[in-house]
Image (cartoon, one colour):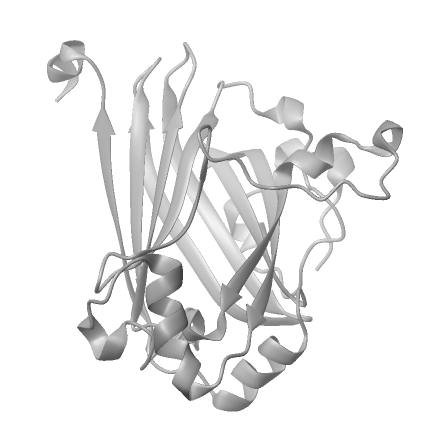
Amino acid sequence: MALSTSNWRSITPEQVLKLTKPTAGFLCPLSANTYGIEYLDFSILDYSSKNVIFNVGRDNPPSIDLSGVDLADIDENLYRSIKYEFSEDVLRLPSIQTTLVFCVGEREVPGFRMVERHYFRDQLVKSFDFTFGFCIPSSTNTWDAVYSVPPMDEGLINDMINNPHETKSDSFYFVDGQLVMHNKASYKYVREDAAQAKKSYEERYGSKRTGAAGGAKAASKFADEEDIGQKALAKQHRSSAFAAFA
């Protein structure tokens, strides 16, 4: 299924939920974000141990390798693409939590919704559909999502490890059913031997707690759709004026 970027205003959540492979490009321009939605911080955690696996934000920006790159050729799409590198143990975590902190501009944001599609090569391996709901104008918000998944086929895990950055995702953000943002990511998983895996997990994530089989075993981030239980938790933070809307 191909979607036309020339008519991006008509793209719906139902259409992106039917995509079976990564899009060739971005389905909407940066200018589609007329609500002033801005990401302030993003974290990925082992839900069982609460160890932080990944964090990026204003105070901790992602590193960008610009060696050999002509800065004159850099376009706006660079700023909405990210490359992740994780240990293979992340694929076997029983549950993963993501926390997104974002702010919105002077307009209210009704029906804020995210659809995220994960693929290995041209195979869909996971799809998420979360609704945050209404965002108050000029508010700062925290969006927590918890992914609880069963074990993934070891053959697929090995393929994902052996083929770095062929695991990709498209994240689509809608306001009241209209596409306002589209981000992309690719993933590299680093293989570790069994003896090194637990040690490296503790060194990388700064903890020796062993919840959920050492926090590095049992399940994966991606699995068949019908076997997955998922939940999303959302909360809003603002000044004391927020109480008037509660």
